[in-house]
Picture 1 (cartoon, rainbow, N blue to C red):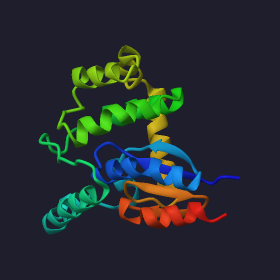
Picture 2: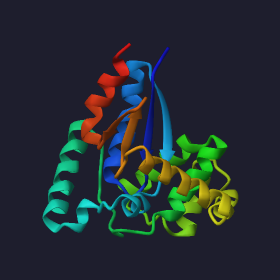
Picture 3: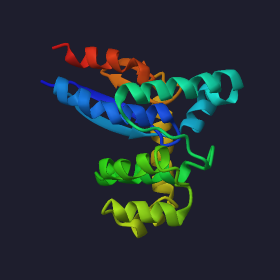
Length: 196
């Protein structure tokens, strides 16, 4: 029986983007199943008392350089979004709605490159709608769904679950009860998935 890795992520996190580029390759090598779990990392920080590394100038500078090294190692492009710390809630809520509809993978395939490569402000409804449409998704449905309590509560529940299971940032991976944090721990995730 193949193992499963749950990946808690959001669209504001460059390390989550880098993990998104690599997890399918790991799943292919190990035969693992992947379950993507959108959350709101700023909300997770509030729940756990954590802060983003970018809030500490020296650490933020180092993290930016480190993620670029990993992008080069993985052979993927990573451009820090020129719009800075945008309001990521609409995109994260769209992901929560997509999780419920079984449309998360095409949504991620549209939003991650837009945010992390093309520098688009995915907080803007018209930008988000164009990206959803380009992914073959019903943009009108999503723009309405992200305003509903059902979708807002689903994202909050995912975020609370991540906190309850020990997460404090993004990306966080679970293989069974074992937790791994950060895309720089993907080798440990792969090892856990490879164990029969």
